[in-house]
Structure formats: structure tokens, C-alpha cells
Image 1 (cartoon, protein in one colour):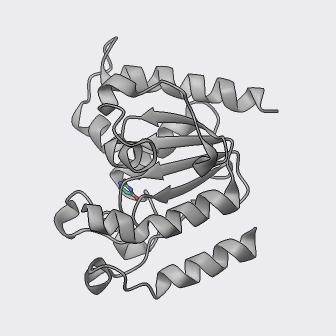
Image 2 (cartoon, protein in one colour; image 1 turned 180 degrees about the vertical axis):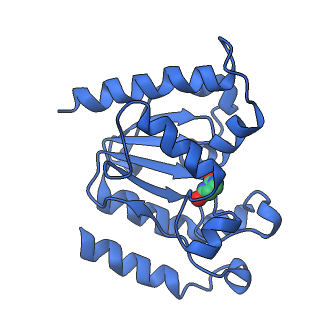
Image 3 (cartoon, helix red, strand yellow; image 1 turned 45 degrees about the vertical axis):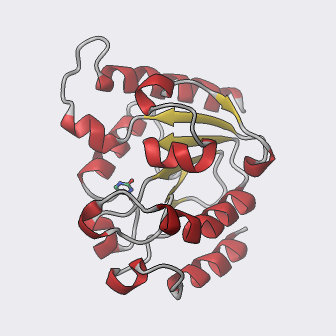
Length: 194
Ligand code: URA
């Protein structure tokens, strides 16, 4: 598995399939372990990720780590990647043609790893994998049964940590409170996998 991922990673490092390669400092391929039960798919690298070449290393990533740590999970149990592997300028949303060009790499990551659980972090990841199933506030916390494209993984859309950083309330029903419910449900199903 490790060697297969390295082949895809190396292809990514020299990828010029979309114009984002011109402005990137680093391709941001993945972090975490290569044989996990959980895969998290984010949106796209931001400033810090582009500089360091690792996903979710900025403020949003630190919050993500805290969310996982709250139920005893860490990057040692999760494979973390993004819908696209190069930073869009000014952190704008990825364009359809950028997502299309990068899909092959994400698909290979899913095919090689075949995680049991896939967390879709924010609308961009949801759209890429599930298509038009509604906005994140409506569908977060719900389990979706994956088709053959994701090898039957259970999929859950969750809020993006950047959204949680902009919505700081912890009151009942707030995005942070809902995230807390979701991560506990994720942990419950994770543990039931044995
Ligand atoms: N936001 C993302 O969606 N991915 C990252 O890697 C960092 C921030």
C-alpha cells in the first residue's frame, strides 16, 4: 500500500494538469497513516499547507486535531488529504476544471486505502464525492452509504474547521456544538469496526 501511494504521490509532484501548478510551492498530498480505517477529505491547501507541503497544518488544522483529540483520535489513526492538491490563489474555492484534473489522484488514494469511514470536510469535499446532496448545514452528521466508487465506505459530511473558527459559539445547536455531536458519533462507529 505504501509503495502504491508513493507512486501516486510522485505523479502528483510533477503534475502540470491544471494551472495551479504554476503558483504552488508544494504539492500537498497527505498526512497521517497509509493504512487507516478513517480518511478525511478536506477542500484544498491554504497558505501554510502550501509552504509546508502537509494538509491541515494552519489554524484550521490545529482545531481539527483538537476535535479528534477530544475523542482520543490522532493523525496516527487517520489519513488526511484534500479534494485538490495545490493551493488556489487567495484560497478561493477550487474551480470545476481543477477538481476534475485532480480527481484521478483522490480516486487513487481512495482505491489504494479503501477506508471504512470517509469524512467529507465541508461543501467542496461533499460535492466531489456525493454530488448535489444539499448544503453542509443540512447534511452534516448524517451517514451516507458509499457506492463502489468509494468501495462501500460509510461517509459522513462534517463542518469544515475554518467554518467553526468563524462561528465561535459553543451554545447548544451552534456549529461547534454540532461538531461535538458528530465526532462522538464518528468515534462510536469507528470503535464498532473493531
Ligand atoms: N483547509 C483545507 O480544506 N485543507 C487544508 O489542507 C487546509 C485548510
